[in-house]
Image (cartoon, rainbow, N blue to C red; front, side, top):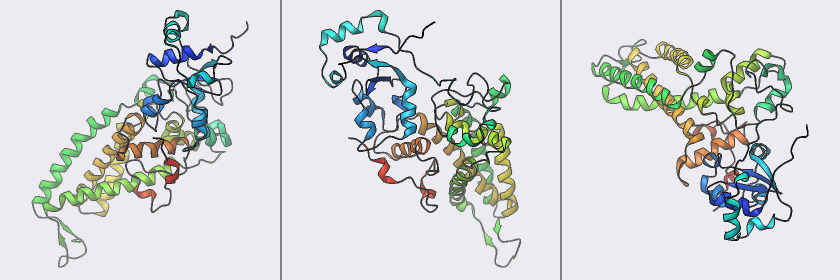
Length: 372
């Protein structure tokens, strides 16, 4: 049976749908429905809304910003058909109101079908769990995992394991915030007893007493140390390049972070599940206990734990939030999305860009020129 060709759309129909709230754009006669993507656009929703009903081919090529190959590949997921021949120029003109009304009332032209990943040309079978497939990609894995798609990922055959691998953003807040508050109270009241001294294990004469008034500064120090740890883990663990011949390291990389780069807007995989997180958190608490006096180590730890909660909440917001233009979070969102789509080997800071400066992994500022 013959497969039907791409659907054709008139300029009037495109403008009619945009008037109803859709965000359709064209690029060299190919039509894309970005209605489900506008809130995620790193340049802001309004920028895309202003482009609705127009040809964006010039905007993709720049100036002010030339879009990456990943961004162009991402666009193809929203392809819905072609503009009728001779109607290309009409997209930048005002369509007669009667034409708009007539097109909007045509019942057989109301359903747009989104195009998903083509399982015949992709390197994996999206109908099956991906975790056990990616290890066989070998040398193709690194390029494949950094070509993002807009679709959910299934990791495990087991429904139970699959459930445990997903976490809603608010679960992190609900689980760890009470822990932060309780340990903060324990740390402060312990310091208030006046028995904590720094360097007391080496010398009693020159040991330094740690008063309860120092707790806020120690807490902030813990947050700063977490931000450094966040950077180092993201850069050297999450972005390691596993050997092409090592099936298990490729699988581990995909489980830890690769699946997030492959599907960056899968809302169920933007924060770390509490169970594995507790193992990592417990390890770092043990390290602090070895290096510092008990109460002091606990105070630094609780600051770091608070930093981790902020990091997870911010990571979710950078993917799904809509910060106002000109704010710190607006710039940070654009920075992080650039990391996903264009600069995967730089821009490792998430809750802050600070550590990208001394480690020289900052995404160049000239790539962030914005349209008015």
